[in-house]
Amino acid sequence: MMKKILSLAVAAALALTLSLSAFAAAGDTNMLLEIGDVFGTLVQSEIIDVSAGGEFTLTTSLDSSLSTSADASFIGVKTTAGNVTQQTALADGTVVTVTGLSIDGTEVSLDSAASESVVENGVLDGNNGVVLLFKMGGLNALTGDVPAGFTSVTVTFTVTLPGEESSDAETAEPETVTEPETTSEPETVTEPETTSEPETTAPAETGIALALVPMAIAAAGVVISKRR
Image (cartoon, helix red, strand yellow):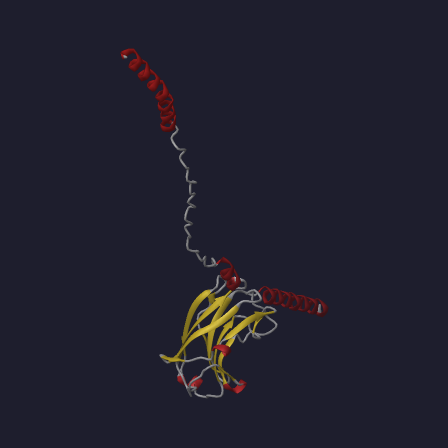
């Protein structure tokens, strides 16, 4: 009887382990905002699906006593995977960039280099996500003063899926530089000057007239001889 119970317990544990492993491997495409005191209570925002990429805003709040320890305060945008043994379903190469942070209604400037993480091997920065503040761990993306305590946090972040930037660059039409049209002047063909032939009629008429002169003189001589 004891062996049977033990066998059932082992089988149940194995089934639970396999189901957890399958869940961990499958993961999801959800993200959330987490704030609070790592030694006390960490509060999480609503969960949103970021599988389509784009820009998102999350807000959450907590009692100020849960974030009074500046060294233990934590602000991060994370996947729902709890640790490195769990994987997100976001594709490797997905870029998560926090573009805005507001603490208790006041905008806080961020170090852009420390406000971005990339999904690698199925995890987003060890599943801590984009950590904006965790002084004890030496992580601080805030360029201004770190608050000793806070009650509400709002973050705006973008999710860029792999290949989105390159496809945008490829689809951008290159600027076409239109060359000014050069209207070529038609070549003017100069007709060669035609030298008009001298009129031959006048000399011909003169030749005929000269030929008639002797005949006229002879005729005149005949007339004179007859008169005599």
